[in-house]
Length: 151
Image (cartoon, rainbow, N blue to C red; front, side):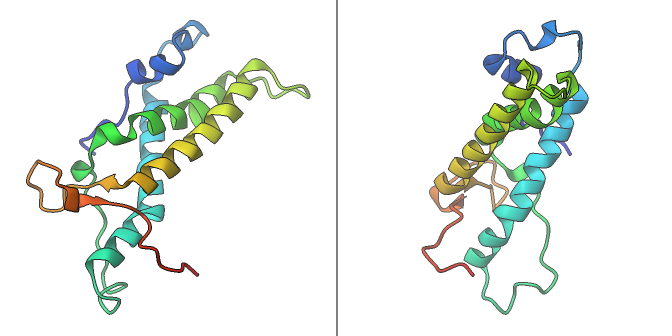
């Protein structure tokens, strides 16, 4: 995996004091969050993108995996930062006692924000460099919806 969706500097845009809680390095948590965002893209966007490209007869016949290097990474920075905070960083800091502590409340907040942000990215259109040209054209910005009934 050669891409980086977010760094600790991007996380600090939302939580400037995140390094003041006793854990000095969140590299592993950011990598896990990135893997989770890419997995969500494979689950929630990639099949829809494939339907827009191929006839229904082609789908399911050796469908390829997306090339992670072809995503426009800046599009997923906020979602990756929220994913890291809500699912990987704040759970490490939370006490999980009967009453919610500050970290648990923030964890829940960022989990909701991740879902909202990821949904907005999908609705706006995922930018994926289909022709590997290094540029993103309007035709390469694929929304999740084709105004078709999903069953």
